[in-house]
Image 1 (spheres, rainbow, N blue to C red):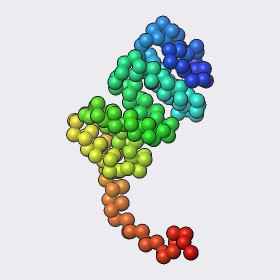
Image 2 (cartoon, helix red, strand yellow):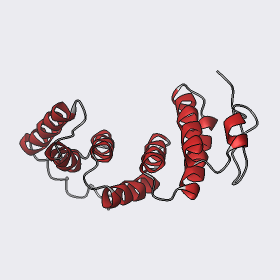
Image 3 (cartoon, rainbow, N blue to C red):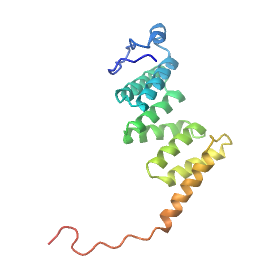
Image 4 (cartoon, helix red, strand yellow):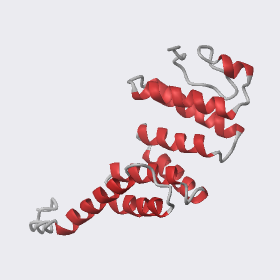
Length: 170
C-alpha cells in the first residue's frame, strides 16, 4: 500500500505519494472521494494524521461536485470519527435535508445518534429507513436495540433528590 504524505492537503494541491491519478485528473470529485476513503481507512488503522487529510480530500471532492452524496456522507462520517460533534451535527442535518429518504444517510446518521446516546433520534431515523423499503442490513436489529434502550430509560427509577445544602452553600 502506498503511503500518503503526512501533512494536510492544501486546496488545489495533489498529494505526491499515491496521487498519480489525481495528477492526471485533479478536478475529479470521484478521485478526491476515493483518496479520502483510503485516508479514512488509514485513520481507522491508527494513523491519526490521516483523519484530517481524509476530511481535506472530501472537502476537495465537494468543491468539485457540491452536494454530491458520497463525499458528503463520507465527510459526515469522518467528522463523527474525529469527534467533531458540532460539525458532524451540521453535516447530519444537511444530509437529512437533502436526502431525506436515502437509506444510507438515514442508517449512518441513526448509528451516529445511537453511539452518541440518543436512541430516540436513532429510532426515528431507523423507522424512516425501514419505511423506504431499501433498508440496509441490520436496520431492524438496530431499531430493536434503540427501542430496548428507550424502554430501559423509561423504567429507570428516578434519581434521588439532591440533599439540602449540597449545592456548595454553607
